[in-house]
Image (tube, rainbow, N blue to C red; front, side, top):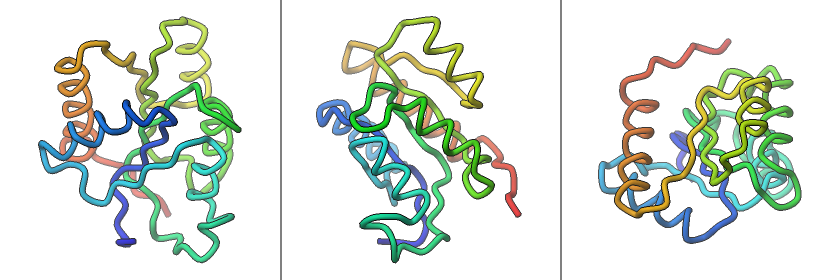
Length: 147
């Protein structure tokens, strides 16, 4: 794997993951994207555990696109663990979910999410939303330098 991970996509639904990746590729924003399929694998990647034990810590992503409804550990548990860790607490996280529950949004913001986005149902709207998110977080936004 390349040392520069731009996006960690945490998504268990292969169709949503494929749409996300295609939308980002269309605008050349999917270079160095890593896709993991559950919350446990996301934390393994971020903390260098399991199959990622020998993975260099310099692979911290510039952006995490996080689904909430995940197997093993849900997105809120992932977010809580990330924000409690010195190495990962400043990584921008965008929750992308099909949930329309206000309680999910409130819980996400209470745990320090940077943005909460409901996944559009229509393909074109979904693709545009993902591309806009990628462009903003990877090109326009200035990430806080972490010590």
